Image 1 (tube, rainbow, N blue to C red):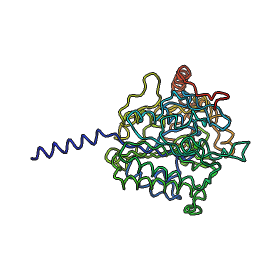
Image 2 (tube, rainbow, N blue to C red):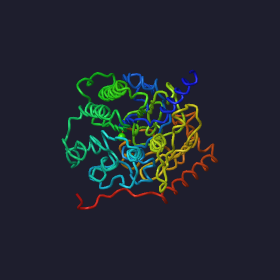
Image 3 (cartoon, rainbow, N blue to C red):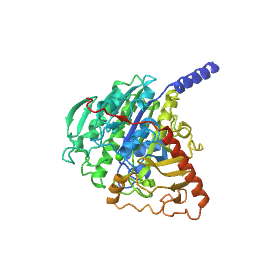
Image 4 (cartoon, rainbow, N blue to C red):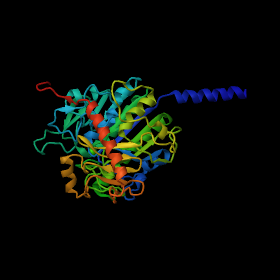
Length: 445
Ligand SMILES: [Ca+2]
């Protein structure tokens, strides 16, 4: 009898392990490292994210890129954005987008029958052939690019709100977007509770122009941005509550992170902000939660980033990524399931638009080409007076000096030479093996 019980326990455990999880990926716009409670913010109230962190794992060296489209290209393809030829920020006038031959996160999980949806800001091309519905997402609701790219600004068209491939509104009331996106996400979870699902939720907030709904406006101690952050926290709470109510909690991986550092604000204790490759521009808050799989209340200090999400999803759902292309990211499930695991990849490139500006290997970070993502980002960052990049090459030890205050290049010529060689050889490889962006044909619909 006892043996039978043990056997059935074993089989139950095995059945559970064999199930592929639902996935909810919450991707905030312009949220900095220090913008939420779990990463040290004492002003803003983020009770749902605080709870999320105590029930999951916090990543303290999770990398994005300095600006929006670049990070979304990394996230969707598992590659540095230069490899897939998406530089900087895409505007309504731009005619490129993520190439249709790229295999996105949604196309990975789709191979295992996942129901997929994208809700929020896409920003990888706004022509029909580039939209989420053509890149593996069954459903899309949101804005094709940033919320400041709207009528009244530099001959830009009215900002469109899409439902699948149809524009249902222009110049939508932005104070309602966080709430509307959340309702869409909750609805999708309810409608697909029986099947594995993947929800990609790239919020429009907290990118400017900032807005929050009636319940949040004027309520935080951090002004409008605090109101918007507290509404995002509410949104996270709504999703968590829905998962618990439907008993999907134990079989759902939830990831919360952001696309780049804060715009015009600081990211203490890190240096720099949006548009720079200082840590404050590209190191993001990141929390992952999957009860019973990801150990609760843990911290992972290893290098990881949004390029690792695709290979990680592939591993989780049991798909072998296409072998005809190079991926830059790695499967980070060893880190997710064991906070004390050794590094999965010890090197990270910091991309500045079209090339690598800096490299991190272990604790060392070398700037070879200055601090800004590109001219535009440098100009934008200049308005907020970020710290100067100083001469290049410059070298920092992120273990002892996470704020990048002491350039120790002169005292460590061998490390400078080694990292320089590593950056140049990695960049040369990307240039040789890079893949084109999609180009919208003139005259095409
Ligand atoms: Ca952004």
